[in-house]
Amino acid sequence: MQQPDFPTKDTAAPDWHLSSGESGPVLTLQGSWMARTGNIPSFPGNGLDAAPAGSTLAFDTRATTRWDTGLIAFLWDVKRVGHDRHITLDTQSLPAPMRQLLDLLPDVPADKPTSHKKRSTFLEVIGARTLNGLTEIGTVAELGAMTVKGGFLALTGRSRMRFVDLLTDTTNAGPYALLIVGIVNFLVGAILAFVGAVELQKFAAGIYVASLVGIAMVREMAAVMTAIIMAGRTGGSYAARISTMQGNEEIDALNVFGIPTSTYLILPAVLSLVITMPFLYLYGCLVGILGGFVVAISMLDITAAGYFHQTVISFGIGQFIFAFVKSIVFGAFIGLTSCRIGLKAGRSAADVGIAATRAVVVGIVGVIAIDAIFAVIADVVGI
Amino acid sequence: MSDTRPTVLSMKDVTLAFGPKVIQKNITLDVKKGSIFAVMGGSGCGKSTLLKSMIGLLRPTAGEYLVDGDRYWDGSEAERTELNHRFGVLFQSGALWSSMTIGENVALPLQMFTDLKPDVIRRLVELKLGFVGMLQAIDLQPSEISGGMRKRAGLARAIALDPDVLFFDEPSAGLDPITSARLDDLILNLRDGLGATIVIVSHELSSLFHIADDGIFLDAKTKIPIAHGSPRDLRDHCDEPQVHAFMHRERDEEGRN
Image: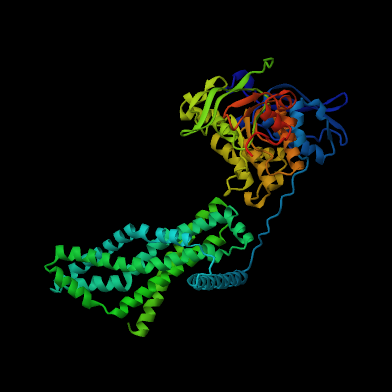
């Protein structure tokens, strides 16, 4: 079976026939039985009809040239058909290697565990989804409450959170994100200025580009853009990290020691985002206004001092504080949902990928949805 | 040497190292066709590293590695892949691809490297799983089965392409004695049935004495192989204190306490 090349003489097609010998039926096999050629016949269910029930089937394999597991596959068919027809196989008439392999194989088809999937009705699906959704909201809220509690304990120095973890997570979420947050916000500010400059110039109102960029960045863009970046960058990485820990039984190990996952894993993750998001928001505002400034100065006939003056008077402190709070909420939301998704993930490699994707999608959609809610609140409150 | 069987794998003065850190040096061994070759030694002596090098995952820093007389590492990447198709490997924890069912795991090499039709592949997959007694698990996910079953499924995948040489990394680690003994019998049956050569990394003494008929003993301290021969021979005739201690489960008195 181990010759790599195929001499033509040996490639006679596999063939079999049943004859009756002196002591009962004999199955004669001939030719080359190599699985890789793909021409192994299957033994028909009625192949042993000529043999009387209760007889013993002998084998004659002297005419086989080469064989591998393809021949065993065929013999297995014979074994199963023989079992159904109550015909005993005389495996002693097989060469030892064939016999040993054939003996390993069961003679009845395995009863496979039936899948428990049953079809549910429309109402059942809606009910299950609703219950699921409510449970999920409850779980995330509980997780949030635990984290807040852990946060207060941490303030009084009684928490089990390790400050090393908080420092690592904060470094990853903060300083290491400065470059990408800067680039994106700079470009957003520049794009706003471009769009505004083209239109406002027509009315000789070029100076209002500064107001446009200032209000847009401070109220919405800096917070939302930064949150979207963090959802993709940090949220995805938290979900992947926690779901990998789940797969390695690391979460189980924590639970056995009684180290609460909420304070050990989730608190540093959420806190790091809650701490860094407002700072990143501030930084995003500044860089975005700078981006608008660069475009406005190069395209329009306005002075640097005029631009900054117009920027400063364009928005009130209320708007600024409102967006500042919003960025903290975004941070907490991204941290909590990504950790929750990581904890909920399955244990295989594919599940880690699914968890990371889901964390990013939920993070981005959630941030925009929360932003919409904030916009409504702002309208009602009158900011 | 009285063994006249042809040599399948052979190493001459091989040195294995990760960067400047030498794991083992002066490894010389011959694996005969149809034998069960044991790689033995204490923890951390480089057994698994040697296995890695044999299956082409780690290039030796010195020496020669011959597969059927061909220099393995001199060939191109494609030639090495071709040679690797003659190898089947059972990794320590099965290393099943977790996103596929057990059946798909066994089917993948057949789909990738043969032109067989799906129904023929299905038949071969059932056969290979039948050999290891795992037919009932064909449609289950790896996460749904126990560690011992995962190992048997890994074995079914290793023999998917009817390999000439089978490599086992700690096949009995983490298995109960009964399952482990059954796996040993299965290995013997597959060796006799398929005519394969087997290289096995293990420190499970009972299983080594039962199945292996040749071997090499690696020493962690001197970083060289200190004995060659079958585990039974080494147990009965080797005077090397390290080997003696290993084979008779003695504590290493002068060693690292």
